[in-house]
Image (cartoon, rainbow, N blue to C red):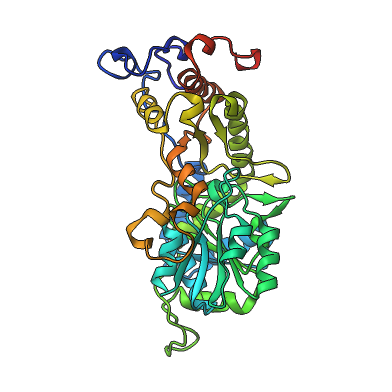
Length: 412
């Protein structure tokens, strides 16, 4: 869908203090809001047909649609088994419980708070570490330095869909006898050297909420290799109930409904297409942004494949002449929806200030990322022209006005 422009981005070059740029009389770049995200959904006719069939039946949970979705998802991901749950957060909580984790778990500070919340709900101690400033993911060297005799697991994150350093983390976990869990909330479809990210670690937990590539409305999916763990998870998602009424596992109600499973199942055939589309749009953004201008993007290079659940630009005020928050204000006034992630990072949040790990001075990358990252619109409903226009607007604001019109030919 092409968005209607009200002005050319190169024409909007006054200073940020100029009323015509950010105050009264400002003419927005787009006539209507360009959303930062939009659900990737299968055709409505397919959805309605599937829903009618389900509503004509008598079972809306724990049925054959959930089982079929688990089988098809496992085939897509290249793993032995998947367990569908109510959310990524509940999936993480259940994995940590069923693996019997104790003591300390190492996780990145630069992540969505649900990653850490799952540990707190299980009474585990969060040990926070810093990230790599290039790919925004957990730094394996910092992980190793944080391991103590009380460490039971590493909880890594595929930030914005960019795969974490799976091989280094797996080797580290193996060498120290630790469990390795991946929060793959953003990463259904991400891969390393043509292998889905779920093929590493003890478990990978995905989100199927509306901003993700595969949508169930709400919901999560746990990919596992161990059949015993899969069996425990299926009990735990249903309060801990097994073959009898006598519970052996402390569980909760984390079941996925048949309706959610049907929506996700219908979306699976379109996922590869959606993944290509998002990568094509991300490549357009990447063409415009230059580190020399203080505009850096998340480093995703072969053999990595990202879902680009979010497209993040890192705005360095020392080089760009504009800070992230100023850029956010101007883009918002241009009807471009943007978002900060993850600000504040966990080590600065009230719940996590007593967690183990380095002092605030030891989170240089997380501090920089949280203060400079701005996520721009990226979803299958956008066209290349809209993405290019947003990129040119960012460049025009970040670069000195006298050079903004002299962009290379490929920017035209």
